[in-house]
Image 1 (tube, helix red, strand yellow):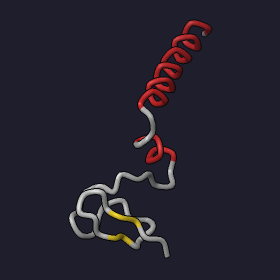
Image 2 (spheres, helix red, strand yellow):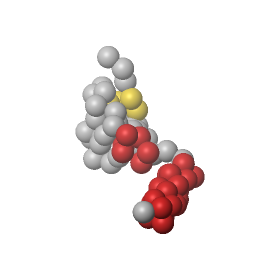
Image 3 (cartoon, helix red, strand yellow):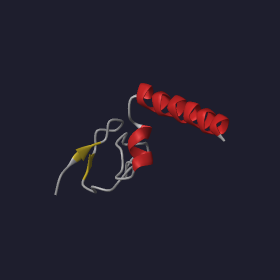
Image 4 (cartoon, one colour):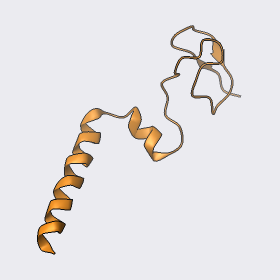
Length: 65
């Protein structure tokens, strides 16, 4: 069983799926297994790149129709 240390209260967390600390209730600042939770803690440039790309793609598809 792996141990994770809470960055706020420095208590060990043994639950691998925990997103919040069991002791202080603050975020453990680690991504879950899904795509949305991974981009939440990813670099903001990557998120903005995909957002701008998606908007530009929508405009191109709108003008093609």
